[in-house]
Picture 1: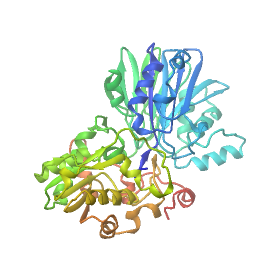
Picture 2: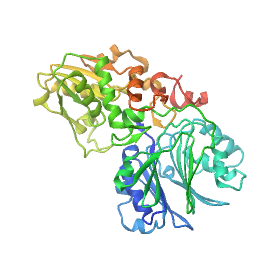
Picture 3: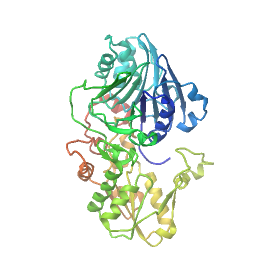
Picture 4: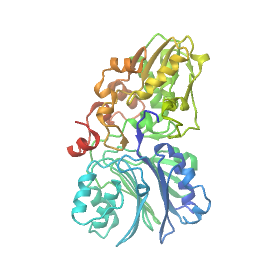
Length: 468
């Protein structure tokens, strides 16, 4: 498996379209890069909620046509998941759907609640019984226990009790509700299709179904869509806007527009800035595909060097694969990437990647390029060193597993066996990401700086992520 960080999930919702479930399938297909472990759709026909969930990719879970016959109605929400909070288990598939005293409700969640364990313990001590290990279920329990007659008030009351990152989409028999946390950690966009309102983690989902992109939900904004149209609320205290900068570095698709910027444009600017900070005498620039490609383009443009396809990715290898025997486990990277000797041999090569997590994959890539005849290998990373775990919806190893937390850049360079190594500076990253938009946005860079916008219980960091 690649030495990469993983996003927790992606969400999608549509209200007011006769093919809601089918369009949700397509929306999830476009968001598949945000989670590959499980997926699901819950649909409403105006009277009942029906769901279909499963482990695996969207195309596998929804491969039978009759599935959609059992998901009728004009509204649906969907979810793709990669587990960070809660295990990789069928019981943790989303959207989570429950029946309670006031009817039925389903929810799909992108992000992590930093106080989920604390809230869950309080709920269990007062009699609540949980059926999943996902932190999302705490929100459902809080809604069920809230006393207000208004669903909107119950949701607001519940969300005031949790902290952290959440882009949420709720579905009842008659309404769809979407909300972003006050910090705006995770993206959530609003669109329209044939009079129906659509929400999605990324705008690329709108492109696939030919929906019109309207705007992104503001941090702390809640929208409610029903038969009378859409209403917007701002039920939370205004706070500093701190969207996750790693969405631009790696997670989001380059053809998506998030946090006011086109991802592709920002990644190219990372490359331009990286070339200004770490130039090198070289012959060619190559990218570690696919996420390193736009930054490599920017680096090559700024440095005046040719960009070549020196590494070819096998797109037919999934996240996991069968390895015949223990002795060839190192074949993992070779199954996914192959160097082109005719391009690399005898050349001084700049290799652009988006990040180094543990360093094991980078070391193997450098070895492959060296074996293909490279004269020199200069690794350039289009983000700062990842030295701290994330609590806001990224699958991050504990700090002791992050190579840059315990090793200097020179030591990492020696470990991965490159001739030189350069990371984009934190200052350069912020300059690049704000160059094409509102420079008042203060992006969350906690995984690089250790400065966390929303504090978390020390117990969680100690026992779960080894921060201290």
